[in-house]
Image (cartoon, rainbow, N blue to C red; front, side):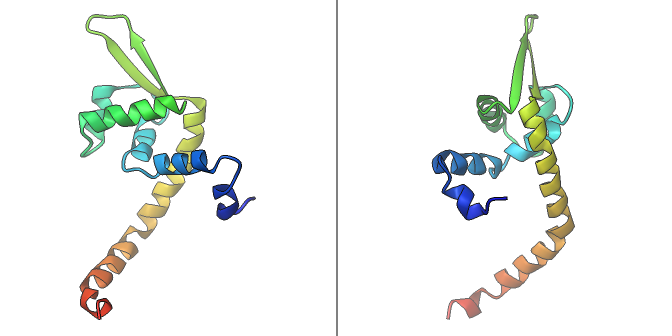
Length: 127
């Protein structure tokens, strides 16, 4: 398995970095996790992802669609019905997202404590 340093300097390091950035943004993994194995409408996604604005949900879904992780289906109805679902590529990322979410859940209290110690110790570091 290649090291992170090797991956960062691979044949297309800019693409590699941009994809890592996409995965590490505030909303991508949440959207992928919520989509799971079912199709969902925009309003359903907006309701279950706390704090996401309609604009950010739109931007995130478009970026995921562009990368081939999400497919968008427009049904010819009045009013139009639009559904989103993970592609096979997106579903393969879902397992990585779940592993990361499990890690966060397992360690979040320790990290919260570390942040409190760090933030409370600010004066000592400034000297």
